[in-house]
Image (cartoon, rainbow, N blue to C red; front, side):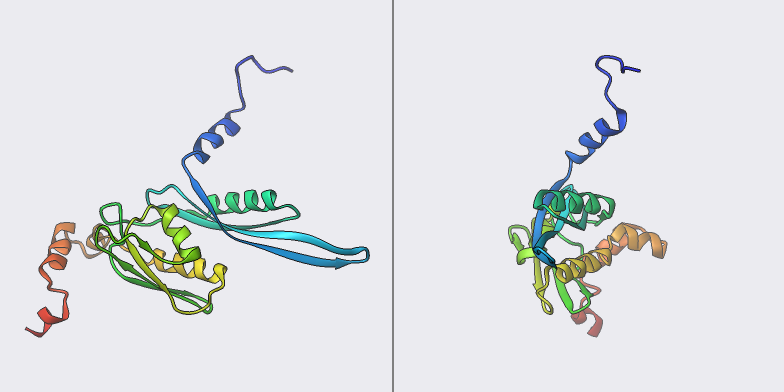
Amino acid sequence: MGRKPGHSRGRQHGREERDSEFVDKLVHINRVAKVVKGGRRFGFAALVVVGDQKGRVGFGKGKAREVPEAIRKAADAAKNNLIRVPLREGRTLHHDVYGRHGAGKIILRAAPPGTGIIAGGPIRAVFETLGVQDVVAKSLGSSNPYNMVRAAFAALKDQDSPRGVAARRGKKASEIVARRRDGIDSPEAAEA
C-alpha cells in the first residue's frame, strides 16, 4: 500500500500553504505549577494572536507541559477563531470604538497617516497582526493580558465600514462617506 512517488497528502500540504499567510505573536506565557507527591509539576499556558495583516485576526490560548507545544496549540486555536475587521484605506479604523471584557476596558481611536501604533503590550500585538498602521489605543481597566485582548476583540467586532452601514440603511456608501466629510455628523453642524 505505498503511495505514488511525488504524491503528498493533500490536507497537510494545503494546511502548510494556508499557514504561511499568517503572522503570529506570542502575547503572554504563564508558568503554572501543580503540587504532586514528588514535588511540583510545571506546565505552561500561552496566549497567541494570529493575523494575516490584511484585516483578519484571531487569538487563542494553549496549555501544555512544554512551551513550544503550548504556543503551537494557542496558534491553532487562534486560526480557528479569526474575525474580519474592515479597515479604512487598509491602514486604520473607520471610527472610534469602545470595548470591554470583564474588568478590561479599552478605547480604540482612528488616527491620521503617520501616527503609528500607539498602544501597549497585548493590544499592540493585535494591531500588528491585523495590519493596522495608524491607531491610538488606551486601556482603562485591567492590565491582565487575557482581558485586554478580549476587550480589544470586543471593540473590533463593533467596527463597521461605511459600506456595511449603507447596506443596512438601503443607501449608497458614497452618501454616508460624504456626510462624514461634510461634517453633518459633527456637533457644530447639528447646532446650526
